[in-house]
Length: 358
Image (tube, rainbow, N blue to C red; front, side, top):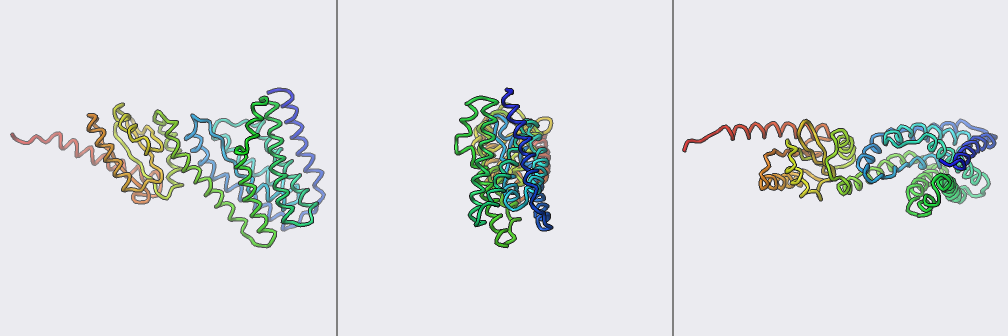
């Protein structure tokens, strides 16, 4: 990293601490303290949810270097505009500290960059906090503060990226599409803050809303993941992905084969458009994840797979399990397919041993 970038990062970190101290003159009431605890608890609950969900997203997109969707702005922005600055900074630090575990789950976390990003959020929050303090109309000032919060955060990160990596990094931040997540989270948080200002206590609804949005993203990414997955995932990676996808989807299915024969993989490749993730399982077996696929559709796909393998001379059994028909979690579905494979294998052996008289 260039020295100029390191210097800018250090200045930003120190400026965040200084801004918090300078703006610590406002009195803190009991209601402010309780609101800070409430916002921090929402962000912690979100981070606990994403510890597994982000790991699954990264596994699905590991060959495409997908960016992580951090939606903590849903609660850090309301903290900036509703709380005194010391409490707002405390909410940001606590939320970011818990979210750090999510970052480390992907294996690509940098503590220096993460601390800088937290400092940038604190500085953006300080500007938003002062925008609210100087405005005459709370509702109007809140949306102006939202613009200031997003602009300041993006500007600081863009400057640091440009200093560290050159103008090529700055071009990424000039694309409006790069900031959709920030705008979305701040708008959700802003709407919750407006409701709080008019004494409608529905700020808690931001948590299920954000989790719902993230689950929709999980479904979309799982449907597109097969484009970048030429070879089966390892059992551990597939398990991480499938567990979160099955949890997120109302309906989902898995197909399980008791063979890792290359010909079986080729048969699966013929059905690749309907498969969201393929993984190895057990000593020699393959398992296929089908998101948003009800049981009857999975049964039909299994028949097509058996037909494709039979025409290719592949000796393998295929088992099917679907949510909610056979269970609610991945472990239930795997247990059902394991039992079906055992039953089918026993039937196959019995058929082979039976020799009718001529």
